[in-house]
Image 1 (cartoon, rainbow, N blue to C red):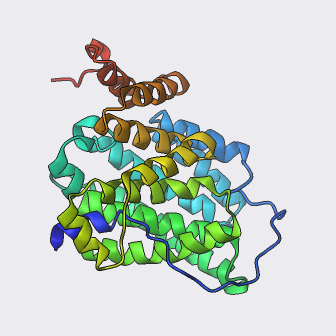
Image 2: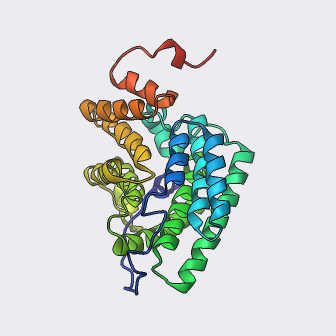
Length: 295
């Protein structure tokens, strides 16, 4: 059951919810209308320049203190930095079945996780304030969905606290469903759904049956299709979806897809050592000396 929970926390199953009145869709929202400063910050994030990314996110949040997305972005910067530091976004991790299901070896950096938690808690508070005024506020729903999704990933992959992660999964379930009903083109939200479907669909029949009894289902093909939605049309999480889809493609021996995505990432983010290393691996080429870990 522990293994089932470890995998389940990465899943986002869709559940029925009541229909409520929505805010007008033409109301500007940084989550759904590209903000140049936020986009610049996320570019730094994917270049692995986490300090520069956080500086931009913090400045943006200071100028927009009531918007949860600023705190979401700050939280993402800490989470992504730790995922990169732990080598999670790599084939070494993704193709290792034990770590793929159970999380990292060792423990995450305590200071990083404290900063991450603080930003997530702040984002959740701001999101709830918006939803108190309108239960289908897109910004609030997006903030809660990403906050819960990131926190469940942190619990599952970095801290291996499956029960806590499952609680956040349930929170993300509800908000993701309402968000996609209000904003069907919220393509960044599909990255969590796609990852969940792919991971659950990768389990053997016995494990999938166990998860089915607690209401969690998965399909690898559907998962990769959902990741493709974000990889093709995502706003801020497009590169994240591309690396997940590329690693999924490598597991499925879809070499051409993996190579194309990793080439695109390497060209867009030339200083990201992880993308360049993974592209070399996907092409079955030696890893360039400048990219190899220092002994």
